[in-house]
Length: 561
Ligand code: GLC
Ligand code: CA
Image 1 (tube, rainbow, N blue to C red):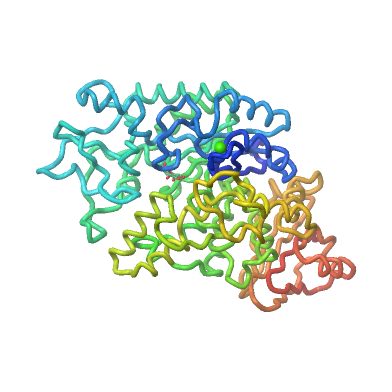
Image 2 (cartoon, protein in one colour):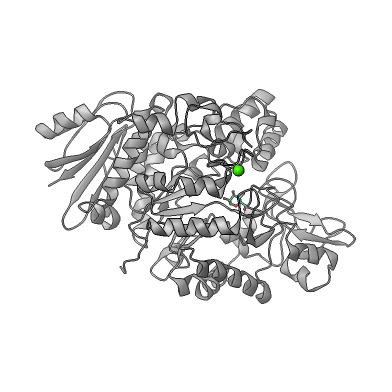
């Protein structure tokens, strides 16, 4: 396998609006990010992914872009962005931005021009279609609820949108549109960006017939993802995009890809794949509800373990995936993947360890390094997220009470990840001196950066050690390129695996159970390299035994013979 510059890097996702506000308007900003570069460097971060900072009406929090060449005023200026690039470079860090090119905002100039002249050139930048017998062209339900088709005022046509109606889908069949996008991507890369996180990219290929699908809900509609799953040919668009942009710059690209077809992984992340890597969402998909969040199953430990292990085995045949516990679209991982008794500093460290030492590129989401958790939400009005509002509505329609629907949203809402970063125990968790745009999690006095800085045993200081271990001169090679092999899969509560290369054999083992668990060691132990139970580690180091005993929520990383 050809080695790439990004293989051994650790990445961190910033959701700018909630990161750090420096001018008191309640909204995080570029100045805030610049001021925390040293904090991120100390954590061991190499690559920083910024969720969208482009000019936007923020209907979907910046994933609706009105100008691809402008920084949103809320976040700062282009000068400040250039300063961020330069400051990151000084620290040997890389910046990647979000690339949202399946759709733009309805406030984008292209769409304004298209509406102004529905038969003109710009209408062909979008999908404008005539309805069928007084109905929209097809029965697709958009991801955020309601039809995918919205009337074009003053015409008998509709325009297509898979997300909100303020996010019209771009027509990738149009070579002119594609060229405009490539120019834009190259413009940013030439500025010094290291690459992109690529949004909803599988959605760019449409079935131009827009056939109806069997309804799957009481609204008579079918989820639009069914069209995505049934159409072929997205690979040609993706190759064209890559050849005209990323490839020329040796850029790092990490794509958001759902609904991939069986056997297609090598085409996406193989040696000459469309992207450097894609996110592994397999564990997150375990809590996909059949009809929405209201029938989303709770994550079961054994299913989760099996899913992660199998995904690792499959992926290593083709390339690398990007491993996450959470992101801006998911609830907090500590609240989702840990049983209630494990939502403690020890449990959080355990989850972090088994995730970060997997084979692949680790992406830490802001606040994960201090163990931020889901917030407590008291009413639907407290939420901002468009998708949460839709899911609340779906739950109510399905017969759930207000209280039950709120419970569901509390568990699944994207806003759980979007509450401001908890920097200190001061007012508003030190995020802003003004009024935060989204409420601060009420647990900020217990969980915050400042207090964890002072505590040698904190989640934050543990994450620093964990990342440092992964990148250390001695173990970097095995944790980057070492083969992945599951261990102790037949135990009730242990999640464990080996990372092995010619020189080293590492065992990562964690006990997710409530009780002590014991297994027989398969290889003699050379060293304990990391543990979340310092005293236990010392003991084990003194007399490595044949059995490995792990208390509840204990994780240990061993170098074996
Ligand atoms: C992706 C983003 C999500 C956004 C959607 C539409 O899934 O991660 O936040 O709402 O695309 O752009
Ligand atoms: Ca601000």
